Amino acid sequence: MAIAESMRTWARRIKRDAVMLWFARRHPDTPLLAKALCIFTVAYALSPIDLIPDFIPVLGYVDDVLLLPSFIWLAVRLLPHHVIQECRVQAEAWMEKEKAKPASYAGAIGIVLIWIAVLGLCWWYFYRA
Figure 1 (cartoon, rainbow, N blue to C red):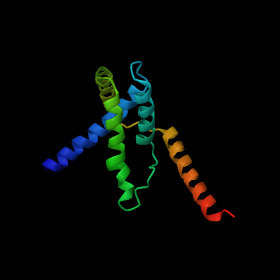
Figure 2: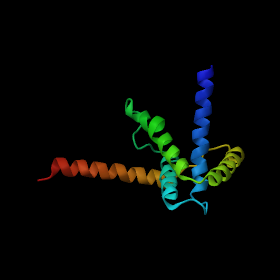
Figure 3: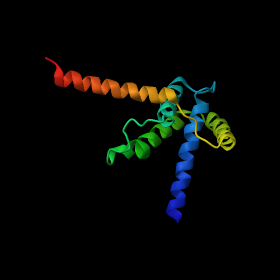
Figure 4: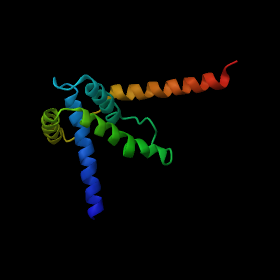
């Protein structure tokens, strides 16, 4: 039971920090590089579409287990401590009030565009004259 509880706690923290980055991207004290990483991470984390679909064995869960927490960790490391504290309070209040995770349709559009670009490059590579 201890492992299951620690996994639930870890998942809640990941969700909270994704929402925290959503607030941090608009905070006036957030540095430009951190703001850009927050925007990318939030768009990716809250997108209803995964970059690597979950039905692909092993690789489908790599983004959920490794990639997303790594982006969140890096974004949090780039943020000033007071911004993290303020935005975590905002995120917890928002999550308590809404009882749901926000969705990023811009992130979904970005992922669809990446897939279209990859498919276009594959088509160009295999069907060029």
